[in-house]
Image (tube, rainbow, N blue to C red; front, side, top):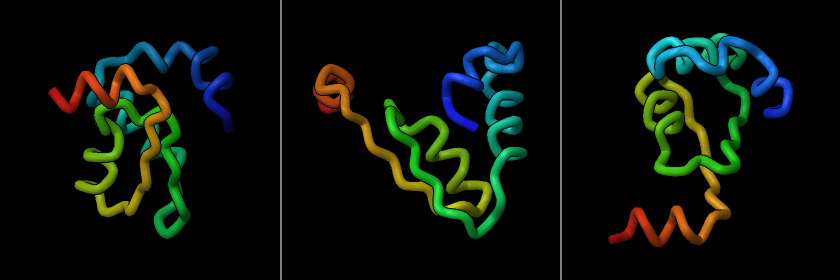
Length: 69
């Protein structure tokens, strides 16, 4: 599943806790997880807490600079 598919689904607009559960339902423990456009790491933190080992990349210089202030 790619992110375009996610945006098309009604579930994308769920509250954070429910949305994170939905993302975890798509994953298989032990798989590599790369979150491109991870922003402030919202999903990364939740996935780490759930026992996954994700890696995040944020290409937006705006987000990176904003979060370093």
